[in-house]
Amino acid sequence: MNDIAPDKKKDVICHCSGTTKEQIKGLVNDGIDNLDGISRMTGACSGCGACDVSILELLDENGADCDV
Ligand code: FES
Figure (cartoon, rainbow, N blue to C red):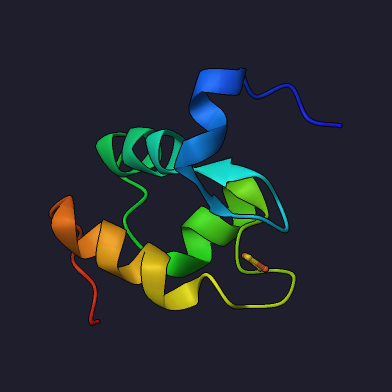
């Protein structure tokens, strides 16, 4: 069981780790703007891998310097 507030659950982008879009946006704001860094900090992309493209798109939308 994770401790994500119910109103944030709809923003989960990685269901394996429970990582939300807001968490990733916060990390991008802190300068972590690549998939490896996001994965290390949150556990996203370390399970089934289905969220890779969605996270890359989110990084791109938030001005991260990565290839989609
Ligand atoms: S949904 Fe992100 S690793 Fe499975």
